[in-house]
Amino acid sequence: MTDSEHKSTANTALQRITPSEALVETLAANGVTDIFGIMGSAFMDAMDIFAPAGIRLTSVVHEQGAGHMADGYARASGRHGVVIGQNGPGISNCVTAIAAAFWAHSPVVIITPEAGTMGIGLGGFQEANQLPMFQEFTKYQGHVTHPARIAEFAGRCFDRAQAEMGPTQLNIPRDYFYGEINAVIPQPRPLERGPGGLRSLDQAADLLAAARFPVIISGGGVVMADAVEQCQALAEQLGAAVVNSYQHNDSFPASHPLWCGPLGYQGSKAAMKLIARADVVLALGTRLGPFGTLPQHDLDYWPKDAKIIQVDADHKMLGLVKQISVGICGDAKAAAEALSLRLSGRELAGAANRGQRYAQIAEEKALWEQELDAWTHERDPFSLEMIAEAQGEKTFGQGQFLHPRQVLRELEKAMPADVMVSTDIGNINSIANSYLRFERPRSLFAAMSWGNCGYAFPTIIGAKVAAPHRPAVSYAGDGAWGMSMGETLTCVRHNIPVTAVVFHNRQWGAEKKNQVDFYGRRFVAGELDNPSFAAIARSMGAEGIVVDRLEEVGPALKKAIDLQMNHGKTCIIEIMCTRELGDPFRRDALQHPVRLLEKYRDYI
Ligand SMILES: Cc1ncc(C[n+]2csc(CCOP(=O)(O)OP(=O)(O)O)c2C)c(N)n1
Ligand SMILES: [Mg+2]
Image 1 (cartoon, rainbow, N blue to C red):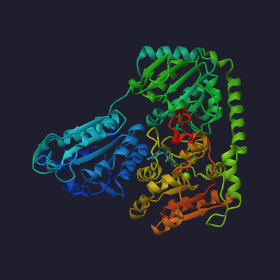
Image 2: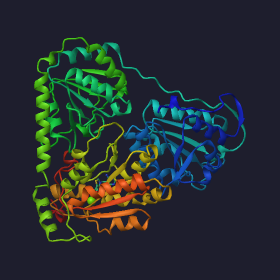
Image 3: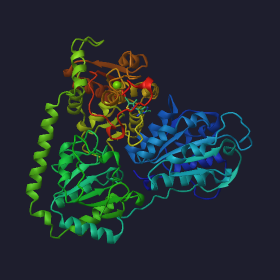
Image 4: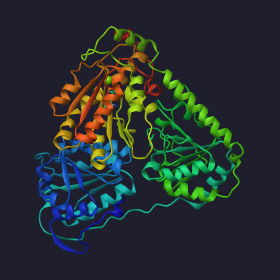
């Protein structure tokens, strides 16, 4: 649902009203039904009337969780996610989550009550200048300069979060909730987006018509613009292979014959080998982020001689990272439609070898699937040692430590239809990129370019609140789970049933991999000595399952989904994994150590 479709009962005339009422009425006018946060005196006057305005405040364990929930809510629904907290520490607790939402392009509004105007600068209680904290991670910061302007600033924050596809901040001195004002409740002003400049669309159509091996990169913009259907129509018209941009595996249906899988870290070799052959690439709704286009699997796949057409709703992204031939500042859906229209009835150079391309796509995909099937475990020396060591060991469940890749394959096979999955940052979560396939958009919520551990679990809770009818699953490593598992209490307290998969490998694996590759296996701070997370989950009132036999992975997921969908229960599936480690995250950014001082001489 878009903002314009919300039915608002708000009075649009000038009214005598309190600032708290003006704020809450503006929230209601924007269709807000859910806010995430922790209560506080700073905004209690407004909070007191949330319920009669049809707004539920879900109280969380930690405000970072609330920020991620707002992000997940926005990503699952396309609507605003809203987060609120106590001035000072409640607000500073949100910084990481707002940064993550910024890089996920989520329309999150953070409402930040601030110290009162009569005390600012005197060093009172919970006082901080709250605008600089979020300056880098917001598209707009509305600071309420007078109580009578609270609705005006609030409305602008909601409009700009959608228009600019990112978080906005509404900063309200806490004394400005009180008093009486004359105010108009602003109605949402959704931005109508267009296809882009006509000349650039014409140029792009000419390039596509002349392409002999066209490839489409379907990006996050395709998800956000609900443009999968239009992208698919264009791909079929051109007979173009479609690859997902990094972490946007839900931007094209995986069952489609033209789908090739994701680019980027632990992505699809089929996608990489096919885009390497392109003479024309249509990058639809993607900023072509640097991390998502790095060489992978020893394949430097970016087609350096191809003509690149880039479509992005933000003009600042055009040509920023990759050289392009044509840049279109437009909406992915409208641009795809406009290109289809321009190409229909035209002679397409690629028509001649269309059948051949379909065959090549099918062949590369089959090869990649075979490779994945055979790739049951990692084969580097460290991993082989870890696997050998685990063979003699029993888990606390008395079973075996499992190979992460096999676990991920089993999870893939057992995924329910219409599932939403969130993923964290870590070695096993990254490898999951090869095994996460979706049929519809708004299904994958990865920790995007902010890359913070602890992202996935609170994010899936927010997604579940937005889409309660859809199964919701989060993935996290044991380290990241430790950061975020407190929010299990939020699920239990507020009946928000989700399924959390925890890959228990007893280490901060992704970073330890760098110590293997660059630091002579000198393991500093990499080991994790954990209790059973399933037992912790049970003590928090959720269900917990320990999995230490491969044949139990699929049934455990199915059982947890049944608990979630049919019994309203949150379940943590703790999967015992070996310490083997896949390819590292940032090989590109590390250098082998050099030591000049005598005392550190051995540390190379
Ligand atoms: C908030 C935050 N702190 C630290 C890091 C650095 N970091 C990246 S991956 C990683 C290890 C993750 O370990 P775990 O969650 O157990 O997953 P594994 O790699 O073992 O699969 C760390 C510490 C980060 N990305 N985010
Ligand atoms: Mg781990």
